[in-house]
Length: 241
Image (cartoon, rainbow, N blue to C red; front, side):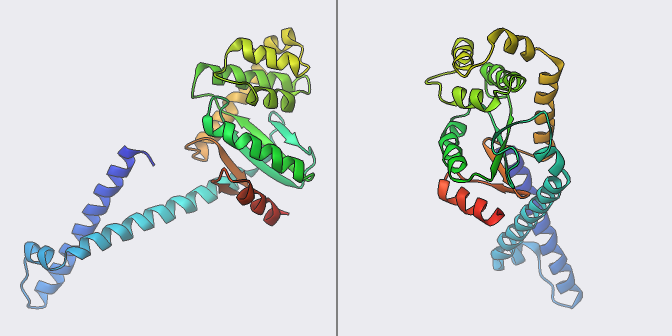
């Protein structure tokens, strides 16, 4: 939740809290006990705090429920889009979805974790969904890997890009792709194809639909896993088997 949304939620909670308190006062006055709002606030400040906490808890629970519904409704798009690249076993029984950005520092931190769990779980498939919003090179890298998929080299280029040292550049990405065994001329042509651009747009639209608010976002069995820890991720994979 960004700061502006947090402020709106807090203000809404305050309004609800005050309204609840006023209703209590009205009921109290009807019973013959006259009490002012000021007096009630002075005597029961915790009522405002409790009402705000209850409201925020309810909002959070409703948001989580809605997120689960959206994930369930989007299962086919998440796990079975033929336009997506993947890592690991193409027929893996356990399917982990990763939304990421090649320019994202935390995505670079999760990369070796994914590499390790893939090595340890031969029944794991990682569906890789690149987003392109952090830098101009994000889009170039995303298109390069999706174009490499047309040559059967998505996972190789995905790996090669994440192993680039320092800031991404077109030259570094091209060099990494060539080392991964890609025909560079064909890759560059495919990067501008309708198919590749459509795949990138579909990923962006899906991320917005299911409210992916940051990267990396990992989804397994319809649940978002927020971790960079290999042990936590492995436990989730074990439970999914």
